[in-house]
Amino acid sequence: MLAFFSPVERARATEDGVEISVGGAESDEARAKLVVNSAGLHAPDLAARFWACQQEIPTGLLCQGNYFR
Image (tube, rainbow, N blue to C red; front, top):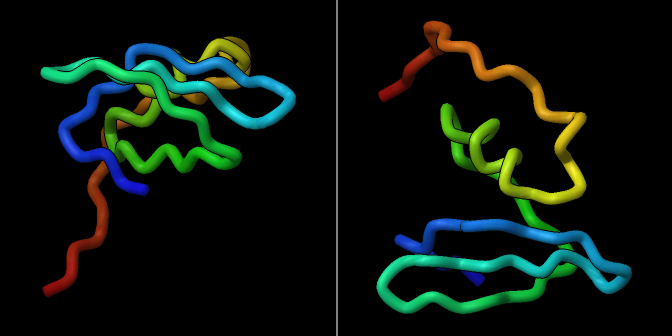
């Protein structure tokens, strides 16, 4: 499932997977067995909202990437 325009407020790891609290116009909670953090430059900020990851978050660094047409 994809949830566009749904800002993650926080997430918590459980024995069954991950519980995610989503904000925005219609706030809600979701459960997932697997979560992929594909937030690009905002990935460290998103990882900081995950309760279990507080000590494992890499520092975000700006760098030039490769771009293709």
